[in-house]
Image 1 (cartoon, helix red, strand yellow):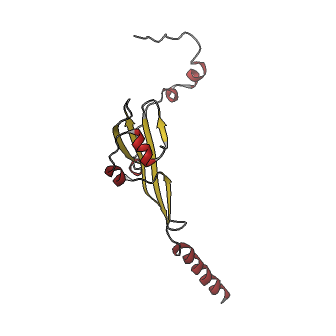
Image 2 (spheres, rainbow, N blue to C red; image 1 turned 180 degrees about the horizontal axis):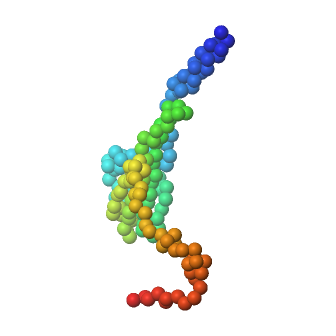
Image 3 (cartoon, rainbow, N blue to C red; image 1 turned 90 degrees about the vertical axis):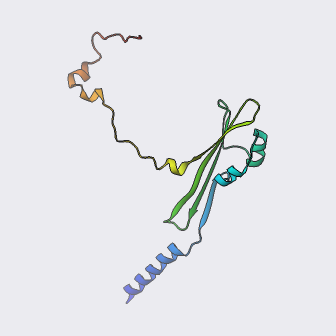
Length: 145
């Protein structure tokens, strides 16, 4: 009887932990999405910083601003889902006018599959004597032509 009661209590505790929690939304970076970006007519750098705030990263060489935005929904300990993850890229000219706007969806980038094609390795094909004494003796000088 005691074992059945403990099992019943354990099952109820398990269901209480899993199902009785409210969703927890976590934002990282700037809270902007694709719809907000399409509705904004950003013309220059000052207007961008005024509306979006300071960028997550500044590329001084190519004169670009990067804004990172991510939203994660966690219902309970076992279910965590990334709703969106974007990087917004704004490129400027010498007059600080916006030349290019780009949106990178990081959720789609993670779905890329890695190729299984391998390159040949010359080191493995060499024999034991060549591995040991391969650098000894005369070598051909590489040609720059």
